[in-house]
Length: 250
Image 1 (cartoon, helix red, strand yellow):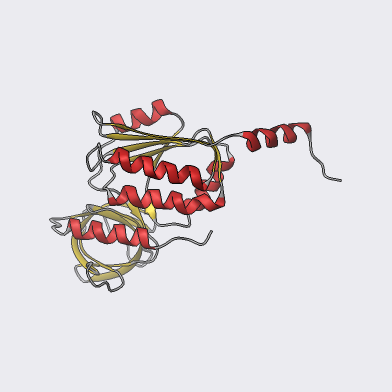
Image 2 (cartoon, rainbow, N blue to C red):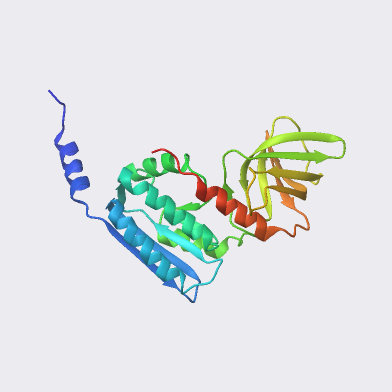
């Protein structure tokens, strides 16, 4: 006999009857996109949100910030996850700026979303517990020099004087990157030559050689700031392509 408590039955009833609700709204004065996703979200709901986002983005400028409120979202149905990824890829293609995602600490959706985001290539978002905290974070945080991307696969080579090492990208933007590398310890302010190699492509740049300076060190990782890097647009296009071309098996 199944051990089903009245509390669990009540919880399951709430989850089952929670209808999806999605809202996309552009604030042209703040150059900001507000997204609200609540209830049990199916593919149809996210397809509508995707359409609404495209209309909203027409009214704001590249570099727009996004506050995505999912605090009342219970779950995303598995069939809707590819559409969510499509929304991420679209925002990247339109050169989104800072992204803040509002998540509750304890929810099925939070666990589901974290598991999903660990499997895909995407941008890095900040997190908040509520809309007020999200607004405050945008107010006090510095505007980054380029969206940060989380990629799986590309190897980064780096040289510092006579030293040579390899590492894996933790994240990267057009102004800097973070690299995991146990092969070579570099002190702060070390100037290095980075080489980032992607698969061959007919039109996109496949190899980037970038002068950089180490600005942060922590255990087996370091962060580097790019110096006098002129190919930012080409790098952004390549990063956007890399994020968009891979979809995890869900």
